[in-house]
Picture 1 (cartoon, rainbow, N blue to C red):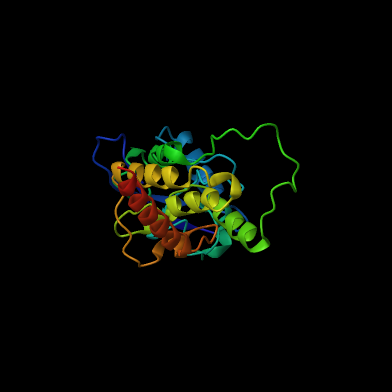
Picture 2: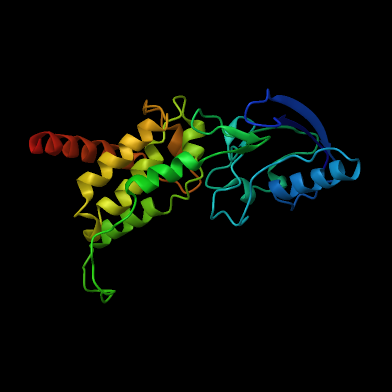
Length: 251
């Protein structure tokens, strides 16, 4: 398989970026997208050229580090997959593929296709945990959780924090990400004690990081590799409104 790649190159956060064209030749159909980039980089290194810089870690669709915008869509047009789980058999011989980093003010480019997504970490650090004293580890069945609640919480907890929802949103909103993290803890018995404090802290940190507002286009749900529903955004808005009201009454 022979392809033409249009790749975003940017030497640093303050540099001006541009698109460069590369030939990807003799690419096996069974190769993953990142393996295809590895093959191209080997060729660049052999001729003394600067390889294409991109993030990756587990290459198993678990960590979300491999985030790329492919032909204008975060993680590509294939649904339910991360970039590392995208295979070249999804493309045709002779295709031209555009490869860019995730675009958002809160995700500054580090180099080429690598962006700084630590803003999501700071949202988590603001309240995405339980710190009340729980004593020793309880027996697994000591705190009953209904199946419907458990299933919904587990679905929200599958968020890997890749940031595709932000990159797909016209406003670069992190509402799906934040909603998933808040939903995960706010609907478990262990998370009830700090429910209001958590949602206030995480939403305010999200705003401070420069993420935009949700405009209900649902592009976030469409590109989420874990298929997280926009229902978590509705729940986030309700929890936040209640927490703000209670905060006002307490003043």
